[in-house]
Image (cartoon, rainbow, N blue to C red; front, side, top):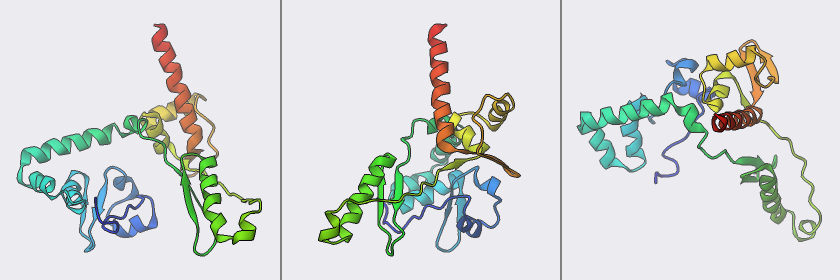
Length: 211
C-alpha cells in the first residue's frame, strides 16, 4: 500500500542502524521497533505506530490514535503483548524464502521457498542472458551457501523461551552444539536450532497425549 520507496527496512544490528540510531545501544534497539524520518526524527515502540500508519496510507487510523487516548493505550497494550510473546508467535510465521544472486554486474536475483526451488529459479533467470546457443546447453551453477546464524537471543526466540532457559539446556548438555563459541557468546546455524525446536515440541506433544 505504501509507495515502494517510502519505507526502507533496516536490520537493527547493521552499521546503517548504528548511524540512524546513534543514541541507542544495540541491546536497547532490540527491545522495540523504530521509525526514522527523512529529517532524522526518531520514533520507537508504540509511539512509532501513528507515523508508520501515515506512511502506509492509513491516515484515518493514525488520526484516531492521535485523537483518542483510549485507542492509543489499547494499541500500545497490544504492541507490548506481541513484543513479550514474539518468540512464541514466531513459530506461526512462515519460514523465510531462500535468496540467491549471481556475482555478475548487474547481479541476477532469484528467490524460492527452498534451496532447490531457489536454484531452479536462478537457472531460469540466468539462461536468457547466455544467448541462444549456450542457453540450450547444460547449465552448471557453482553455489556458495551462507547459512543464517543465531546467538542465544535468537535461539530463545526460535524456541519461544527466555535466554535463561536456553542457557540451562546448554549447561545440561541438552541443546545443539554451537558451531562457534565467541567472546560475545555461542553461535549456531539457525536451521539447526529450528530442527531442534520442532523435535522438542513434537516430544512435548507426545508426552501431553500420554498423560
